[in-house]
Every structure is written in C-alpha cells, then in structure tokens.
Image 1 (spheres, rainbow, N blue to C red):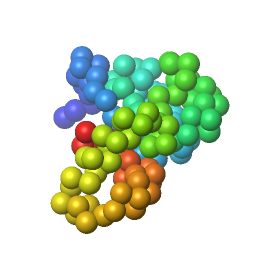
Image 2 (tube, one colour; image 1 turned 135 degrees about the vertical axis):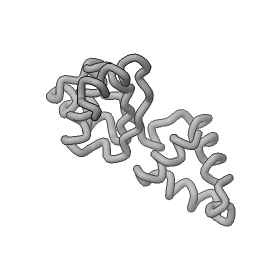
Image 3 (cartoon, rainbow, N blue to C red; image 1 turned 180 degrees about the vertical axis):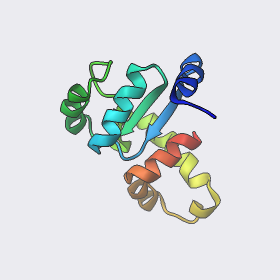
Image 4 (cartoon, rainbow, N blue to C red; image 1 turned 90 degrees about the vertical axis):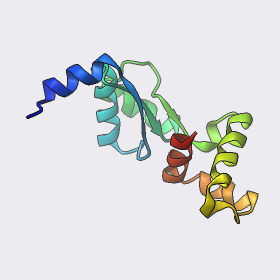
Length: 117
C-alpha cells in the first residue's frame, strides 16, 4: 500500500508540471504552494496574478510571484499557438476565430488547450 512518503519520494525525484484550472480557489492555491515547496510538482495556476499574489504569499509559495496565467496574459504568439491547437481539435473545427478566442478565456478550456500543447 502506498503512503504519502512513498508518493513524495517518487514524485520529488522527477517533478512534473501540473496545471490547476481552478487557480483562484484558496484551497487550490494552498495545495499548489505545498507542491512547489515540497518539490513534488511545478504548478501552474489558471488565474489573474493580481488576485492570486496575496493568496500565494499567504499560502507560503516558494516563488515570489504565483506561477499563473490566463489566456489574455499570454504573449500574442503563444495565444495564436493555443488558438491553432484548439481549432485543430475535431469538435472545434467549425468554430469561428472570435468564438474560439472567447472560449479560450474560460479557465477549463484554457487549461485543456495548454495541456494539449
């Protein structure tokens, strides 16, 4: 049977990136800070940095700024790449550019497109 120490030991040997789409939830922020602090994972919170910064500091995150992003916060080239990935998915091929851009502002859709890329 696995224990937390077994998980911690194995995960800390090769920390992976983890994207947390509900990044403005205080419980998610606390968990992300612990994952970072314990070197288990490299979290990326989906949310506004201005809203996350005080919560991140309170949660004891190791990095000075919360590791976060929103679709609008990305550089134009990165937005275009995510848009391309999103529109290449079979269920999205019939979407127009503006509708796809609107959908990518949703944290869950943004998270999925980021994970695909």
